[in-house]
Image 1 (tube, helix red, strand yellow):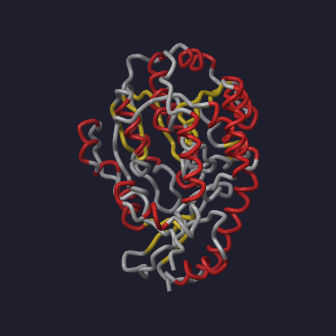
Image 2: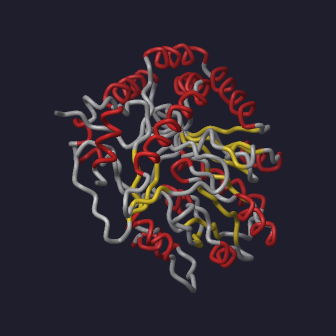
Length: 387
């Protein structure tokens, strides 16, 4: 009766945790080994680590600013994680928004072009829920102004765009290693780049502050590995102060270092990413097949190659209602466009138009779970909830 599916997740095994403990003894060598794995996997020369995806994005923007000190505006999709504008503001920059196509989760071309100007420091493209966005469009628009592209694959590690891993398709890329992402190292963020000048700028920054010790991180990881199971997930979900799944705009987040313990966990998880991705795709394909013909429910279409389906995204028609069934891991994700966040408005560059695609997504987008805990009975109940 307490079975509750998390919206996303990848459990850590005891072997993962012990790999983290072993790596903690290796110190910086473990972190260097993980960096090497990242460079080899994504075909880049440089990798940098921080305590979160937000911290990584803030650091990356400040690195780009050292190379283009006169520019202070970052172009963002109007519908994305609230962590993205949090990082931009934390780094000290303004935000210009561009709209997103609800049917593909890719930028709207005219809106993107209007968001990129002479003061643009970078264009960020986000591959939401594991769906590769149209990188050709973004690179074409950015090239007109000579603006670097940040390929934000925080939710799409393992996806490809025209045969190349997302995250490696811009001047720099980002990955997140937090709970609910493609691989999980308790938390963490990754920057990858092939640009030597940008890498040199990032290396010139003072070292990040040390974060929690290994013992505390071990128990956090152990708790996450246990509480993500459907038989227990109801417990953390029922505690309001944990704010699980909440979209929070907060530019005051800490920026700390990545630890050897996390590197050990992340290396093991990275090695089995293809297997995990294949499992998510199997679940997503079956859900799409079962939902076929369901009135008022439309799976989001992939632009190019198959998504990695961190979550399966579907759109509801305006008159479509979801039957209330607790515990199925179906969520509405981000509750508004970035333009509607009151605290962000002082940092926005005024746009001439609204963002109808982003506003539509906030009203109609649902995400369905695709992780390894989904059983056939779960799939049946998820599809029945749209009946």
